[in-house]
Length: 206
Ligand SMILES: [Zn+2]
Ligand SMILES: [Zn+2]
Image (cartoon, rainbow, N blue to C red; front, side, top):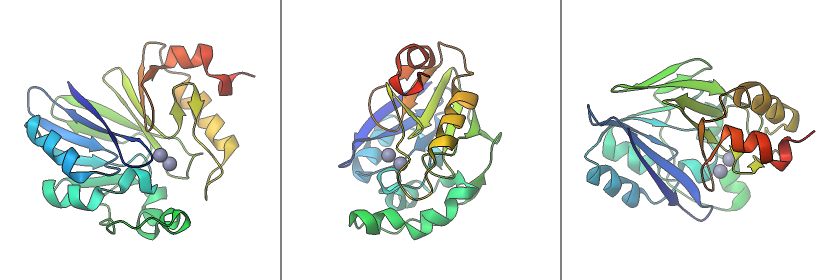
């Protein structure tokens, strides 16, 4: 598997480029900003991007969506419960950030859906809490956790649609049930593993 992590934009968001070594097909997770950097990496990796998957619709994860979509022609996939806020973007008003209006999604995701990129297989986990339609993508021994779980931290729940009890429920029932050696690639900050977080994440202690 090809995996490239790019830290983009003022919020230091992780944009992941994932590709199949054999088929050279790829997906982009959370094109948050700096479209030209993302696209030049895609070119260097010689990938044909099939999907752009959004872990959720917050501005710091979709700022480069329009340009990346236009350049790659890939399908844009987001959870059903997040599609409306992708178009409305309440947070861009709240934080006073302007950015190109995102295109409507091509695919509405729900829990259990598959995203296949060549020989790579990922499953959509609906993990509400940070926002109503947050997803994680699980497959190939790794999980892309968006803003649900971070290295020694968890997503904030004080933004519109956030819920602390939902977030904790998502983390405990969907993520902490995974094997310890599952590598976690979060929406911000360094990667970690489920085992490391189970042992040391201060937000997950009783
Ligand atoms: Zn967020
Ligand atoms: Zn974020």
